[in-house]
Length: 211
Image (cartoon, rainbow, N blue to C red; front, side):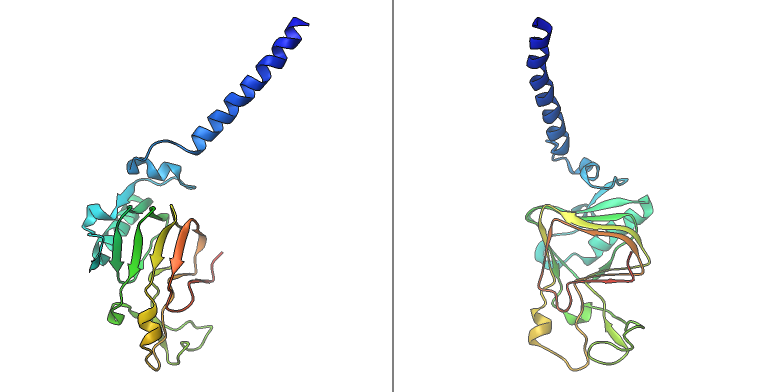
């Protein structure tokens, strides 16, 4: 009977140990951004902090070029995480993402869409629509945009993308189609999770021929 009692005693201890191992591996203690990509759903070659590319993050100066340069670094590396760190308010014109790219918006970080309409490029209306929503053959590019891509993730610790759409709602111009916040076209493997999307001028998330 003694071995049986021993098994009954050891089983809860072994089970508790397994639960502890799973919980600690699922919630690593490290906050080192250099290993951030290891905690994401798909491993990336490296993490690129937009501040390292010159982003100020004060919500006043435009960080567009810094963001674009960080995304170019992902493309050159073959894959990567573009990190928008906590506390920053990164004002930007629209930008294109690249394949095998994760945009990680940390807790307390915000991507802000420019309120200067001239920062939003005109692109062709979708062929299936025939014309833009407000008429004509052109429409505005989305804040986060991509075409013919594979493996795109927008995620974070519930950081925010705020397109500041009020400039489009309150100052409407006839024939000027307002942009989307996020539009990916002719692409595959697209994921959005753990972020707050706010104040899109038009549709917030607009996948076009995405699978």
